[in-house]
Amino acid sequence: MNEHTEPGSVQGTLLTPSDTGHQPGTTGPNPPAAGPGTRAGAVWHGGPMHAYDRFSTFYDAVMDDPEPRANRVIEWIDRYSPEARSLLELGCGTGSILARLTTVPSLTGLDRSSEMLALARAKVPDARLVEGDMASFSLGERFDVVICVFDSLNHLMDFGDWRSMFAAVHEHLADGGLFIFDVNTVGELRRLGDEPPWVYDFDEGTAIIDVEFAEDASSHGISLWDIRVFEHQGDSRYELHHEQIGELGVPLPLIRAALATEFTLLEESNEVGDLPTEDSIKAHFVLRRPTK
Ligand SMILES: C[S@@+](CC[C@H](N)C(=O)[O-])C[C@H]1O[C@@H](n2cnc3c(N)ncnc32)[C@H](O)[C@@H]1O
Image 1 (spheres, rainbow, N blue to C red):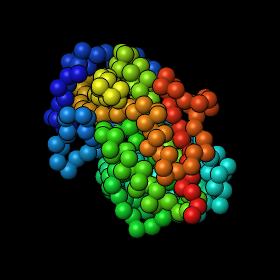
Image 2 (image 1 turned 120 degrees about the vertical axis):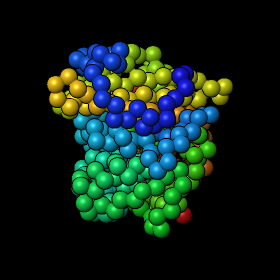
Image 3 (image 1 turned 60 degrees about the vertical axis):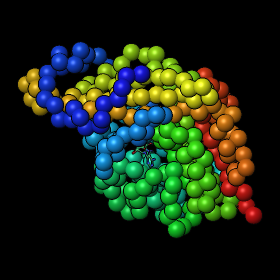
């Protein structure tokens, strides 16, 4: 894997498409989400800026339609916690999921990127939005439901942080409360690493996303998402916005074991509703904090 570039080091560069070695113009399906922050052995030192801060402006235009993943969450809440009055979304991003959860009266979102939260504030003005780290947070209240979707959890690049996130979720759930999350599997991150870069044209310009993958000795998958957005400035001039985001893939048995002591498993499924394997795209988990 290449040495990563400090986020922001090429921010705002003006260039033409031919400067990039890629030719905007071909498009594909929108990519699955990528994650921010750190990767094993390499830590961003971006000061107050976090991953997604730079990409935030383009996020909604470039990423998948949020409707299906919001609908999936709504179905699970209807099935397992239809009386839910409060919900916390970890890694809420631009608020596209919160905005669709209209049956839950009290909504809270937590995200590490102030820029993503600024967009969420416009989309869900009544929600409580908190800037913070999902690996370690203390909001002083308990929720009927906690969700973390669109592989936001994969953004934590150390499995110890996944465990501390699970512990923090447990602390923030009411007795009998629901915990819904999904992850990209190791197999999916490997597949994405094997694919050629995606090129997407959208109204404001062109995005090119290139994923690199490596596996460590404990079969964790480490992927680096190199995201370049060429914002059209008129004529043949483009402004380059560059960001690099990491995702950690964790073998499913390790995830199950980390959850087993604190939560009761209600459902585990892949993208088509079967039991997930390492070759699935996604693993979705629906769990309950047991009632005392
Ligand atoms: C792929 S986006 C998902 C956004 C939203 N859940 C959705 O479905 O559209 C991942 C989000 O997780 C946030 N994030 C990444 N690492 C985080 C962390 N350690 N703590 C809180 N948020 C984090 C990012 O800033 C980003 O907004």
